[in-house]
Structures are given as structure tokens and as C-alpha cells.
Length: 306
Image (cartoon, rainbow, N blue to C red):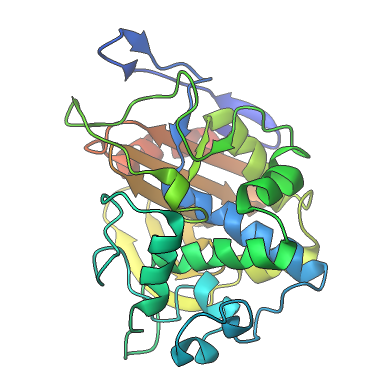
């Protein structure tokens, strides 16, 4: 789905949601949002910061007293910006998301994993598991309940949910072959949401238009905390320049772009906001072998043209 200034410029669907059952994808089909889910987690944190329940620069050990001493050096700011040195999936024992595990086991493995010695940017989905846990402890609610109460319900995102696959959701594939999904109930905050292109467009539009957060909180989310330099060959030119809180910053076709990408087994996701055009580009796929960047390049002109 592509929008500009509140007008839908493209709303496209194709391919199979479930090849075995002969079900095709429609604009209302639900897909895993993968790491685009991290934007919801970052919004949840900023809502708690606004209410005074969380501080971005206080040690997270306040909320993780069962962790080893290393967590006395880590802040929520660092978790949200991937600068805490937390290992990514598969980089430490117990951090294999394909292995079944209860949420407590998964969190225990993250807390026990040594932090990387070199400071700076290191993308880490397990860091956002801790973000989800901190949201729970600071709010006094399960993460899913807090997100539903403060984000999903107010925006009327009726086709967005967390955890198990909802009825009729697209199955995940790789090169046309079905692949087993991760257990999303064991990874709140990282890649646990299911949604449609319409609901996700509504979310990013509401986020960037100030419906969810104060101007200061939104500015904190979209300010780059880690500098990145990634030019993707091709036209229109797409460049990544940094990462804020659950948000990549960059330039697409000469315009500032705020976005996130995602990939889970069988799924790919992309959600972008172009501030000066008040435009959005959202892509959800259920075949991990597909090319997101190529599709985004095909859709960008619809966002750029008046």
C-alpha cells in the first residue's frame, strides 16, 4: 500500500496466501510484521517515558534485577538503538529462535549472554525481548495487553494481533515451499505482530502525524543514535544513514525516509514514512526469497508523484 497526503495511491495484492488451500492474498490478508514490530515496542516505551514510568538513560538493571552485573551499565536508550552490545540471534547459547522455548527461558538466555566487548551499533532482536519485558514490568501489564490498550485499540487496528497466527493469515514460504514459523509468543517486542498493509499504514501515519506520541517523543524516536552508511545500488537511490529508536533513517530519491525492514522465516516486511511528502510505503510478503527492495523501488514513484 502506498499513500500520500492521506490519499491511497496504490493498494495491491497478489500471489498465494495458502498455496495448499488455494487461497490468494488480498489487501486484507494478515502477514507477520517481523522486525517492523520493533516500532510498536519503541512506541510502547515512549508512552511510558511520557508518563514518567520509564527513563531512557537510567540503567535497565532497575527492571532486570535478576540479571548479572553487566546490566548495570546498559540503558534503555542503548537497547532501543541497538548500541548496548547485546548479541543477535544465534550469537550466544539459547538464542536460536527456531528452537521451542518458553518466554522465561528465552529471556534468561538473553540476560546470561555476555555483552559484546566493542561498543557501538550491533543489530540485536534479543535486545528488544528485554524491551518488551521492561514494558511489562513498568506498566504492570502483559506486553500484549499494553500494546493493545495503548496502540491497537485507539487506532482501531482490528486486523493486527500478537503471538499465534490469526485465522486466515498468510502462510510463510521460501522459494515457494512452506516453512515452519517461529513461535512468536516467545518473542514479544521483537517480531511478534501480525497485520495487514492497511493497518500498518494506519499505524505509521498515526505515529508520524502525532496521534500516538508527543512531538518530543517522536523526535527522540526518529533521531539517529547510531550512524550508518549503506547505499543500495539502483534507482531511485535509497540510502540508510542511521538508526534511532526502532527506526532507520535514510534518504530515498532525495527525500528523508524513516523506516524499518523485517524478515522472519517465510516472511519479509517493509514500512516507510517520507515526512516532507506525508507519504507511506508498506510492503508485506510471505515468501522470504522475494526481493523487498525491488518492490519498494517500483512503488516509490507512486509516493513521489503529486
